[in-house]
Length: 235
Image (cartoon, rainbow, N blue to C red; front, side, top):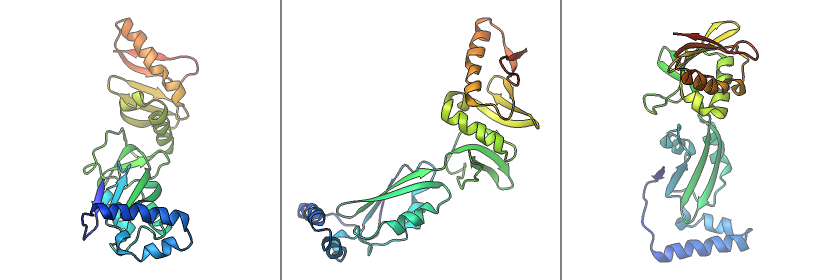
């Protein structure tokens, strides 16, 4: 997303040529070039382009930059990156300049993996158990529901999101049945697992399901709590 700063103006062709010449001079004269160009109105920031902002509102990124049209693209980007990095949805940021007057902000974000009910509605969490500022009513997301924060469930969902996205997309809800048992509610049936189960084990769900479909059997529950075997309970 691109946002214009106040007092934006179109630049004639000679302006673009001057920008290219300025960039070239800066490369060949790193000591005196940037300090000189920093004082030129031509290189004042007039546009901010925010990239990879899937869950972070670009206007919030621009607010954290805290700049106006007195800021030059030759100024130090370090403080800007530090300010944007304080946003709780952002895990990393890199800011570059595009001549003559644009800042390009590239984000890395904490990925939401579950929604947990709270007094204020559903709240998003990532695989590390970090509560995120993402507002599901403003940024619609299709995530499984977890009734309360649970590190084991968040870890498992993070592994599934990264290693078995097809299975992860089918999850409606994950809840703890007992200390050593979790229930994964899929669209068609429930899967019971131990809290320490890995995504590599759960990818077997697809092959088990395919075999049951071939037998024209409708399953109600698959039990993956036992090593080297799967128990199917039918409807």
